[in-house]
Image 1 (cartoon, rainbow, N blue to C red):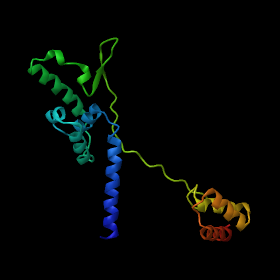
Image 2: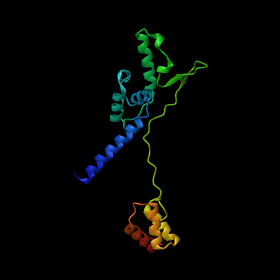
Image 3: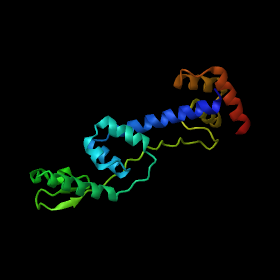
Image 4: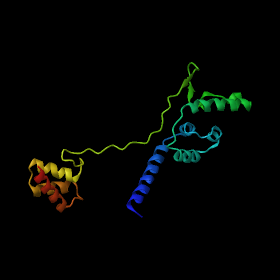
Length: 179
């Protein structure tokens, strides 16, 4: 298999892992809200279990979100309950887009948070263009301070036990040439 295909497969797997970690934090109502906004039929939202909602959301993750569907879903639920003659079950807690204030009894629109995948923090680079906090960056820093090569190697190996002396000496020589 080519490197491009392997990279694409690995990237798709990582995207799926990131998406599922985001979904683990969602409650049933949040999942229902996300599925309604992405176009799952209202009847299926009420019937579906959490795994079904998860799979729908993964398949339709890229689908554009329509927030007006949440209000339509709330109206549909109320109408369905009225048609069944279960007016006693109509409660703002069933609504995905609004809730009821305990003191005044007024319905208040919920602020709907859209699920967004977590962004990775970008790694910082030093002035030399090396990632900060690495063995190489530490070696360059010691070389700039003017510490002797043997002492620098010893200090790097103490801080990073997995560092190899040969690599550190190469980095040290390169830092001296650049600096």
